[in-house]
Length: 159
Image 1 (cartoon, rainbow, N blue to C red):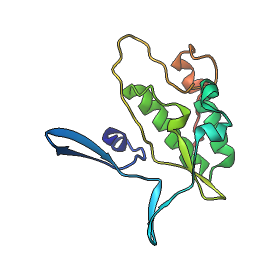
Image 2: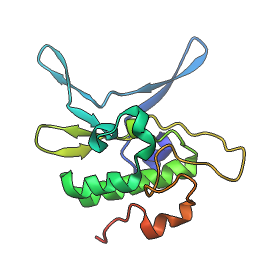
Image 3: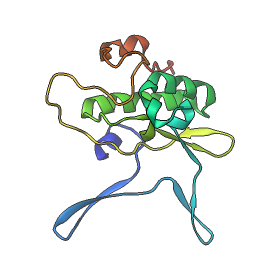
Image 4: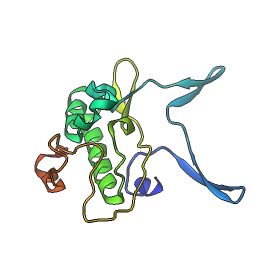
């Protein structure tokens, strides 16, 4: 997750500490804020909810569809699309194949949607020449090569 920060992605703050001879990764909660009498939950919706899908239908979720939702419903679509594209590329390059719709979310304040910091980034070693993402890139068959990304993927409008 520190590497994601270094490449400019918004990520939940983390800290590595040693305890009892083991390394432990501490991840700061971004879905809570201090309030009178304790912590307050921030309203949040997963990409599953944004897509209107349940976990059984998750295989139909795609970055392309999430980008379309962002274009029409998010507060700052241009910056959010730039962030989403960066996350997609980072996930591919670092081997995070666990990027399903439950690992993408937005804050919801009753009026606007805003992408949460990235979380649950789990790089995996690759045993072969190919790996697939948990969430489709373009909404087509999972076997579609990632080479289709520049032509049809989450295109970010020029700034």
